[in-house]
Image 1 (cartoon, helix red, strand yellow):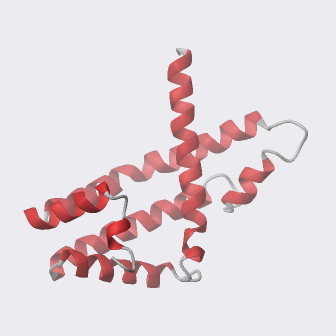
Image 2 (cartoon, one colour):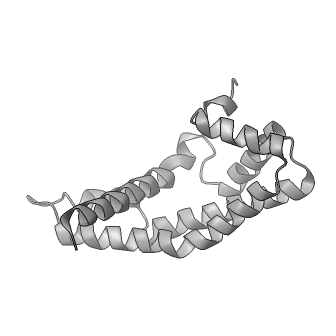
Length: 154
């Protein structure tokens, strides 16, 4: 395999691992404690009100949120201990980086992403494709602004 392809794949895998690690710790930052069901319900309600979703669209958003939560849990569970922070810190425990452990961790995390992605893509498509044109535009605007528009104050 060419060197640039390896570097690109390693970069994507590293980014997925970092994203999974951040997602693993994100629920505590928001003050929801460990109750992901409560967080999901509030997220669906908030997005639903911003997009003015009907009951069918909210149900599709709920399915998407559940699939994303399952993916998050799969990412946390990949690699053994389930604690992304301790998994990452263990790579630096010795006087040299545990390269084999890093490669193994990345392989486990990317496999978790790869295995869950088709369901997430299907759920995201089902949700997005059932929005009307104005709702789709609001989603695109939200993504363009990096999520800042739907903050607590916006």
